[in-house]
Length: 369
Image (cartoon, one colour):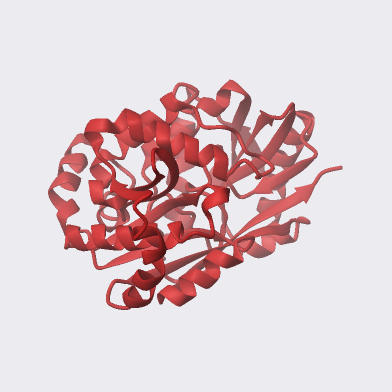
């Protein structure tokens, strides 16, 4: 076996990094190759702001000059200490290959001063490439990890313990318990001090600022919380413009104070599954021509600031989102992803809505010393 560190300037090595999945998932009809540009953006310091306070490396594993595995490791300095992780792990069904790759990532992170590791995750936001697929037999959603069953044994065999169980639910609009949630939401919708409004791209600067205010108040209790930067979020919203309709994003306000949001996009893999990871100019045109055929939306983030969480704002956002989706007409269902087991209230709410569990991912943690 030979492990080779990838150079960001070595196009052949980068091609090997992406081509490996064609071997691993050759006979898996559910697999959808991620868009190469999305993955490469993670490792590009000009596109990923986490490089301002961290580093990332990638490795390939060769056996007899054939690429049989890959892994990436990264850390970010938060609150004065390095938070380490690895991800983008792909390997043939051989335990010795997995041990060598995970060991390489761990050694690099230990040398950087990390004392514990999350895996398999992303050097970026939690809504992308995060967690190991444990259960689910559907095609992966856009930016969602999809893995062979044997990865679980490889990871747990190296001493990793489950940190978070992330669940994904589907709900069709025919099964949504609209009558019940409409009645509950009237507490907020019927109060003139509250208002709910759809995103208006003509005022994108305003909504980006409102999103930051809500996010920074809602997620501040997380251990690895880092406040959002306006320029980064503005760029992301603009990049998502063609993946969403204005009715897909709802903001809640108490008078003029922003207090909640519900953000959804089109389930892009309904079209991207045909592109084999390539988002060429021609495929971009095909996407624009085909996006009207997409039948599913994907909720990517939902939040209410802490002091408004028992006032019906959450159900108000859900009802307004539902009404927005009905306005779009072509959407028949929604996927609600990344529901952590630390959020039992949300899990209970999904059940009462009529949502069905479809996928489970695990985020693992291991202490190094």
